[in-house]
Length: 359
Ligand SMILES: *Cc1c(COP(=O)(O)O)cnc(C)c1O
Image 1 (cartoon, rainbow, N blue to C red):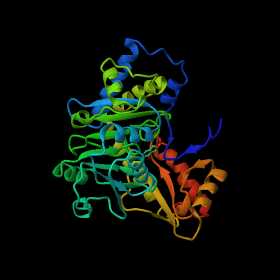
Image 2: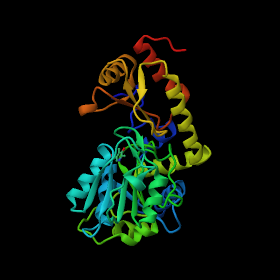
Image 3: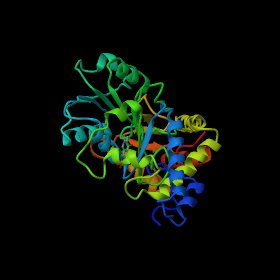
């Protein structure tokens, strides 16, 4: 199998635990029955708890990649009468801009650099918006935004606050109630550490009120919401990934709950960053999530060469960037089933690659 015996530090798909992989190895069951409805209910309940969703919130389960979650939210919740402020700090922010373009939603392309938007109040264009859209962790560069400050701004200006939490759920805090978040988008293959294919949209009551009648069969939220009442989806769900999600939510709770998972991710990311201090690498942004570390070579080496060197020499997979950033940054994920010992494999590989002794 490709890359089966490699060490995985890519930001999606991420390292999965044996327990979750075992669920994936079983026969996929029939799903139009009470037994599977109970799985759906358990997944919904677990996700709502994880993000501290307000009373009356609902989860939509889409069999699709995360981008479908982003696009379907824009399609179902925004209209030509809206005006969205779209945070654009990298490739995923740019994708939300493209989605608004495709669907004719009026928006401002809010290009952001060198800030986590704790100062959004002063930076945001002074226009009348109806919605604020952000990728909580802009995975293309490893930049985490201040969800609380943005939530306060959204509340003050009465904006529908849409947060793509795909690559920071389980490793970094998301609190819909505390931060006034109306929509959270999650996807299976990043923080949740499951195979790709399942995307979840969590809608708070304010968002549920905004769900429109739209011209789409597959992405029609009203259809998902009415089927969701009986624990079902309109079309065949990613049955096995939902079983894995149920197991994963139980695993997180067994290990002390999501706060404990966040603490563990923080410990591992800090351990990694402290351990590589003697290498010619520097942190790309001061606003890093626990989920990932983005590094810039300081000795003129190409980031892409380092990525290839780790893969070819040590069976260690980290993530390159493309385009203009090909030579300047690479990314190391701390999402998924990580331990200090597993992270040591990467740290040792880096020291060996540089021919520097690890102290
Ligand atoms: C990975 C990711 C997505 C979704 O990408 P897909 O390839 O469609 O699953 C969306 N937003 C963020 C922030 C991501 O990291």
